[in-house]
Picture: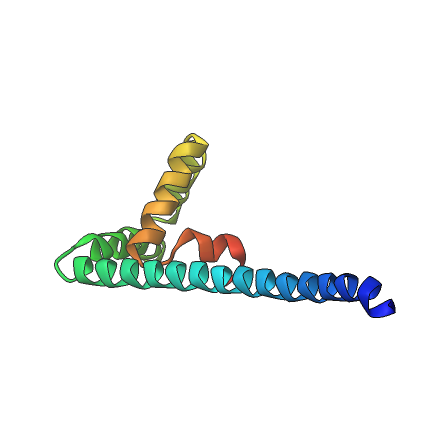
Length: 119
C-alpha cells in the first residue's frame, strides 16, 4: 500500500532532479558554444587585422609620430615638444580618446584587453 502512495512521489522527485541536471547540462553546453563563438570571432578579427597590416603604412606613421617628441627633446626642442603636449591636453576628450583608440588599433591592441586589465 505504501508503494502505491509513495511510488508516484518518489518517481516525481527522481524526474525532477533528472530534468534539473539536464537543464544545467544544456546551460553549460550553451555557454561553451558562446565562448567558442566569441573566441573564433576574435581569432578571425586578428587574422583580418594581420592581413590588412601587411600593406598598410599606419603602423609606421604612428611610430614616426610617437618618435618625434623624443627626437625633439634630444636636439634641443623640448620646450616645443612640451607646447605640443599642452596643446593636445587642451583638446576635447572625444578627440583624445579617438586618437588613443586609433593608435591602439594600429598596433593591434584591442580596447577590451585594456579595459579588462589583461595587459
